[in-house]
Length: 432
Ligand code: CMC
Image (cartoon, rainbow, N blue to C red; front, side):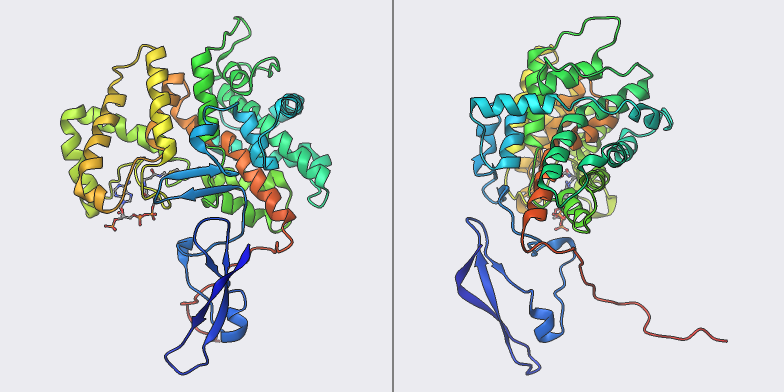
């Protein structure tokens, strides 16, 4: 970051001296006012619940222009990355800052493949869970447990440890997600098969069984790979900020990423595609497309508590670019599987059309986000609804680990410690 030409001056109506604060510019996007010395100079904190106006860090990984509907990983538009290389090339880009050349790509793929198996003992840990446990509960536990199995990569001050833990997390997440699924349905775990692509391998670990040969469908393989690319990073969202805050205490990367998995579970974040598909199912039960108008009235009624899931975003005040790509993938997958007339897809399109023209949504700049169509695609592939957020956490792991690594390497890195505006009881004494 560099100092901008202007400075910010904060003045007070009670005559206290005004305070001058430096302003910094990034490479693109809004400037920031540096308030780090504010408390020391004024005895006051700033108040910004939900971080509506606060940059919590500097980062060179992902940039979003919410008004334009633009998403860049290391400067490359998501639309180009979605059709260039594969997910592991995107992982390389996010981790290292540049796209790999042919040799770098091949050796990175080999490196990740070398780590796809998990310690055999992990299955016994997994077997302690109830079979009907939510996969996100299982995954939070499994990812956290990696720190108990891979002690040799938990020294955060050792760059080699940081690198190997990043590769381990990226390589093992598909194995863990598939294991969580297989455990729930009572089928044997499938070991990874490293001659397959990252997403092909995941499909096989999910849907393969030992008694039959599994053939990867290339359309579904490509669709899944695209889902992974689209979800790989999204700058300082709730789960990434959680990973940074958790990791800022110096905890090991597996523990920090487990915190990210836990955060992602919530319906306002990674749980939205699950919530969106449930919403489509509920409207279908109410009577389908004929009831869309009635449903929209509920959404617009503040007292109903009903939201149009898969719509709206804290940052995008335009069409989420990932939603467009996801809609494209949705068309491809449904065509491949002969599901073009899928009622939920038709319903989603009808809802989208109404919402994009309705004053309520237009005036609030509410557009479809990535989750509006991703649930339909995942469901068509055969992924059960309660595993959707698990797929999201698999894909986001690279973003979390890249952001965590960036934080640890930042000379300005400090433990995160927000302040508060205290509104509770003032000091009082217990009566004798
Ligand atoms: N349906 C109906 N009204 C909405 C919706 C929606 N989906 N989203 C926002 N609004 C209204 C909200 O009620 C408010 O209205 P008013 O100004 O009259 O009070 C206005 O739009 C602004 O909303 P907000 O809640 O202040 O916006 P936010 O930035 O705090 O929330 C959000 C963003 C994503 C949590 C919210 O839009 C939402 O809950 N959407 C549905 C859940 C969803 O799809 N989440 C996935 C996000 S994308 C995946 C990811 O990156 O994690």
